[in-house]
Amino acid sequence: MTSKLFSTILGFLALSVTAEAQMSAAGGTDWKDSSLIPASRMAQHSEFLNNQYSFPSKPRSQWEVGVKVGAPSISGDIASNFPTFGFGLHVRKSLGYLLSLRGEYVRGTATGLDWKGNYNYASNTAWAKNGYLANRRSYSGAGNTVLLLPAVDKVFYNYKTNINDLSVQALLNLSNIRFHKAEPKLGLYAIIGLGVTFYDTKIDALSASGTKYNFNNIPGGTFATRKDTRSAINAILDGTYETDGDSNGLRDNKLFGKTARLSGTFGFGAAFKLSKRVNLAIEERLTFVKDDLLDGQRWAATPIGDAVATTHYDTHNFLSVGLNINIF
Image (cartoon, rainbow, N blue to C red):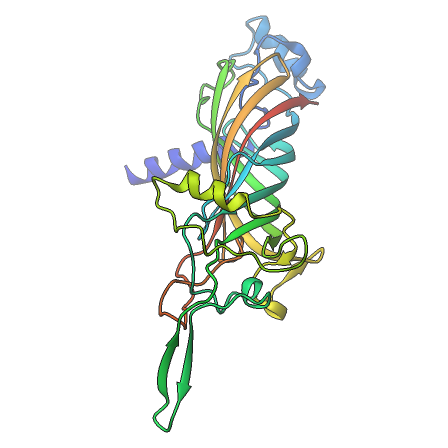
C-alpha cells in the first residue's frame, strides 16, 4: 500500500514538473487548437481529433512577458505612506501544468513619516550628525555615576527609500489542475522566490537653509490624531531628503553602490483573461530581508540615553497591477 501511494505521488510530481504545456495564470489552452501543437506532436494530435488515439498532444510551451505598476511600502519601525509608486518587469516560462518560473525586476520608492515624537535617537547617525541632541548618558566620579541628560530636540522619524529587487520565483497555479482543458477566465496563483534587494535610504533632517528643524512645538501624536500630527510635521519639512540614512557602514554589502541583501519573496496573484494571449494580473508580494535599516531606523526607545537595537527586521511589500502577454 505504501509503495503504491509513493509511486502515485512521484508520478503526480513528475507530471507537474516535466509536462511542457504552458498553462498561464489566466491564459489556458483549447485542446482542439492545432496552432498550439508543435510539429513534433502534430501526428498524435491529428490521430486524437480523428478518434484514433486516446490522448491529446500536449500544447506548445509558451513564454510570458509582463509589465506592472504598483505601490511599494516598507513594514518597519516607521509608519509608511500610501500610495507610492513603483514598477516591475518580468519574463516567465512554464515547467508544467502547475509550476512555472519567473525572473522579475521591481523598482520603487517607499516613504514614511512617524507620528510619534522621538528622543532616544543618539545612536541614529542621520539625526545625531546634524546637531540634534537626544537623550544621552554622562558618567562622572570614581564610581562612574550615571547622569541622564534629557533630549534638547524632539524628532519625528521619516525616510525615502529607493528599492530595487531582482528575483527568481516559482509560481504555482492554484486554479487549474484539469489537464488538457481550457482554464477559467480567472486564474489564481501563489508566488515564492529568492533574490537580492538593493536599496538606499535618505532622511529629511535639514531645512533648505541647512539648519535642523524645530519639532518641539508639535505635540506627540496618538493613533487617533496621527493625521493632524503628520500635517503639522509636513508643514515644516521641505521634502528634500538630503541626509543618508543610518547604516552599517563598511560592513554593508554593496550592489551598484547601494546596500544589498539576499531576500526571500512570498505572495499571491489573480489574473483575468482579456484575450487568448493577454491577461491582467493583480499581485501582492511580500519580500523579507535580514536588515532593519530599510526605513533608516533601528533603535528602540529604551534604555533611555543608551538605546538598544530593535529585535525585528524590515520587510518590503509591492501591491501591483500588471499586463501580461503570452508569446511563443
